[in-house]
Amino acid sequence: MFTTLIGNAEALNKKMVDLRIATGYTKDETRSLLKEYNNIAFSLGATTQEMAEAANDWLRAGYEGPEAAELSAASIKLSKLG
Image (cartoon, rainbow, N blue to C red; front, side, top):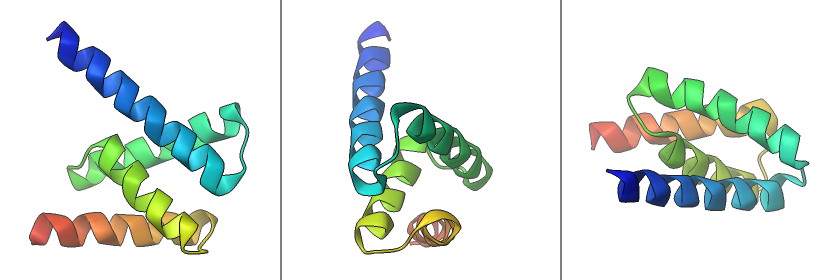
């Protein structure tokens, strides 16, 4: 259990770094963004890591802000249906 918790924390930290690179946000801004992604992920029955990964892909494709979040949520929905 403890090992899983540490692994999840490390993976989430990596996703946070990826988001910081993709957005150019500060650590606090990225943390706030991740909290928003957590709320969206929870409503979709997904993990924050899944949401952050999808958002990172859309951000790197050139989408920003709410548009990237909306596309990420759609990606999660499609992955859950598939």
